[in-house]
Image 1 (cartoon, one colour):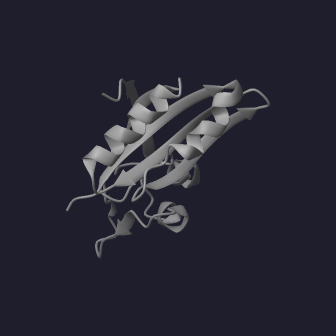
Image 2 (cartoon, helix red, strand yellow; image 1 turned 135 degrees about the horizontal axis):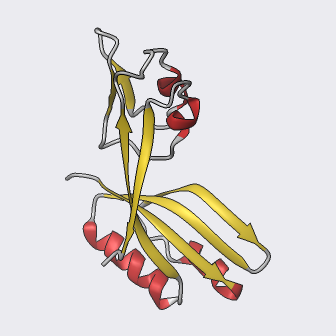
Image 3 (cartoon, helix red, strand yellow; image 1 turned 90 degrees about the horizontal axis):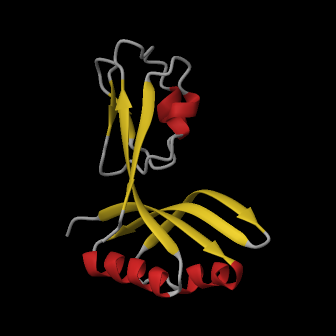
Length: 139
């Protein structure tokens, strides 16, 4: 069965902050990509990976039932081969080994593995890598 990966932007305020961890469904992998936390609110981008599309749907519905604002964030990693130095700095920092370098020294990104965390973008000395974002309704 194929793995389903989505990136969600979650905003919670007040006592709802604690409810996020209670909503994580069994059989799901959750990675916090970035978070802005203050004493009374939380905005986080989380990568959710599951093999069951119903788990993802139920997770989003549970977050909404708790009164949390949830947006799906579609992120796409793009690269400019003309700017790439083939230095492999991007591969060295990728936390999920989504970047490979071919025998011809071409940088390739495995979209199935990539969580669009942008670590590679920050490591790239020439700006050859970019993450493009589009936010939308998760349903």
